[in-house]
Amino acid sequence: MKRFIRHYISFLILFLALTGNVRSQYLQRSLSALPEFKTEVSTGTAHYMPLFGTGDDSSAIIKGISRYGYLIIDPGGMSNAVKYENEEHILFILGGTGILQCGKEKVPVSKNDFMYIPGGMKYKISNPREQSLSLIVMGFKLLPEGCIRKSSGLMIANTDEVKFQILPSHGPTTQFQLLLGTTESTRDRLAAACQVTSLFIMDFAAGGTNNPHRHNNEEEIYLIIRGYGDIVTGKRPDGGEIRHPSTEGDVYFFSPNALIGFYGGNNQDEEHARILAVRFKYPDSIIVSP
Image: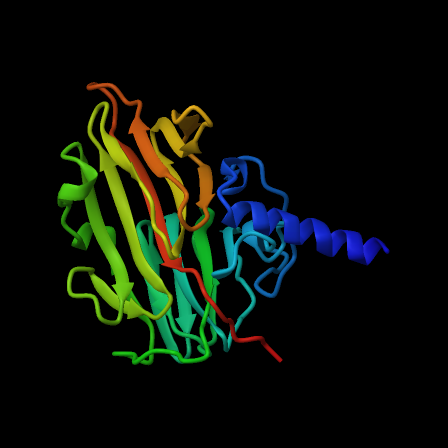
C-alpha cells in the first residue's frame, strides 16, 4: 500500500508539471544549503552535493538528466574515477584549479573551464593545490538512437575564448556566451553534445532583462553565478508573471513549456549579474542502465 501511495504521488507531481500547474513547472535550490550525498564520484576529499537528479527527490519531474550537482574537492584531494555508459557529461569549473584525467589524457583545469565528456569515457579530478576546487557536474541521459559525434574524446574550452553577443529574441540588455551545443551546432564554441542543445552564459547590464519565453520540448536549468535579480517561473492565474528574488548560488530547474525569464537587479556601479544556463531535450524514451 505504501509503495502504491509513493507511485501515485510521483505520478501526480509529474502530471501537474506537464499540464500547466505553475508551481510544478520549476524547482529551486541553492548552493549555500545543500546536504552532502555519497555517490560514485565521492571520496573522503571529494564532496558531492546534489541539486537535481541522483541524490535529490526531483526524479518525478526531471526526465532529461541523471545528475546536476555541486562537487568540492579539498586541497590535495581527488574524486573517484567514474564512467557512465548511458550519460554524456558536462563539467563547469566554478573556482580553483586541478587536473582532469579523462581516459589516458591528463588536462589542467581552472576557473571558467567547461568540458564535454562523452558516454562511456572514464574520468576523475584531482586537486594538487592549496585551495578548494569547485565545479558543477551535469549528467544527461542518452537516447537509444544516439547521435553522430564529431569527436569520441574529451572536448574542453574556457569562457575567455568565447565572445559575448546579443541575441535579438532576448532583448538588447542581455549578452550571451554560447559555450556548447549539439554536434550540428555552427554557433557554439564546442559542437559536442547529443542531448544538450545549449550551454551558455547570460550577462545582464544594469536593469537588464532576459525576455520571458518558453521551450516546448526542452528542460532548462539556471544557476546565478554572479549578482542578483528576479527569476520568472510562470504566470499567476490573473496572467501576471511569477517572480522570485534570487541571488548568487540560486539554481532553478524549468519543465518544458514553463515561462522562463530574468530581470537583473544590479545597479550601474555594480558587477553585471550572470547566469550559467543549460538547456536539454525532454526525452520520449530513455536508455535504462543494466
